[in-house]
Length: 340
Ligand SMILES: [Zn+2]
Image (spheres, rainbow, N blue to C red):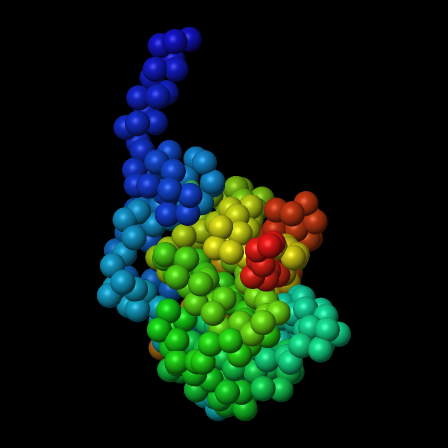
């Protein structure tokens, strides 16, 4: 038995890699070697993913250089189809309606937060960071919302919806501090490393009584465990760090927030993560980012096939979310006030 333990310890030491970027533990190991960009094929490079034995986080190891990151994002990343793009109107209209429909979980969660803010006479003002094409802000239907993103095509799409949009990063923010009652960031924080300056910058933008709603993929979900290296929630190489729901909440707490509520149900993201894992070549933005890939009967059939896989995975996603192991976690948090 002693020899076995020594062997395991030696194996752990031999496979231990970088320090975990979330909890600073040295108990990390290489989980997968040579992963490629399955969803968008932006690069021929291969990437290694490490796993922290203590907090469960997964991270690219080594982290790509900041200067290389932009090349891993196709122009259409998170922009998607729009009725306002005439070249894509035929399919875009249908997909646009689908996208607005499946945003219902995000919208319901945030409306609940805003209703409570109004009850305590807070002036409601929302900023969505990493806003993509602005579909969430349009679905929310609040006046005076602002979207922030780095992508110029995304900002163009936001403004086409009649929503104010600013180009910038939280850590080099063009917006005045202390003005928002709510800052939201959906599937954004897993793209940034280190996360701490971003969360501090988010906190700085909040008015007194302000709150945040943030969502990340949950690498402790049942589908992540079942699908392993093929789980699209890792979105290699665009995700720097993927958190478990527990570790993500602990990270927020470490950065001065208190958790108000969490939710694992997400009609938009959880079933599509299964579909993107099983049939990444059918993901509509992937096909649309290819030249000539968004037309004809073939495209319609591909959309229907993708929708079929998505619908088929919904019961499983509902059950895993019910047991707090959904593919994403949405967190409502507010800055912690120190007790005197
Ligand atoms: Zn860790």
